[in-house]
Image 1 (cartoon, rainbow, N blue to C red):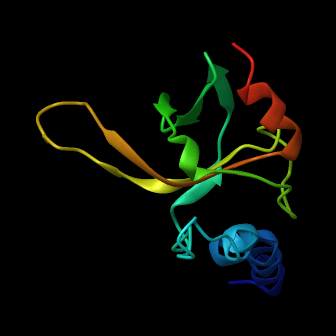
Image 2 (image 1 turned 180 degrees about the vertical axis):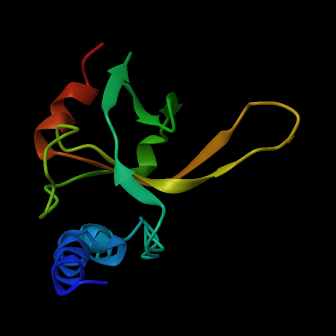
Length: 122
């Protein structure tokens, strides 16, 4: 490998976002019982909407119902804004491998503070 190729490869590697560093914006989050919302892989930005006052978040290509006790209204330092402040932490379960249905279990749902008033709208 030439010196120029090695330098180019090093520059590319240095500029890649590291998963752990990218996930650091979630590391301080705790659920209502004080447990961590995140295990370094299950939090992600997510679009959100309220339907008749109930929160849904867009996770893995589908709208997921989020229990109200899982919602936290807060600013998230490091949020890049691509989902207007929505972030989802949780896991998924596929009860039957032959079906395409996936159940999502929400640990924490993070919404910007101003979204709290939207929840009360019909």
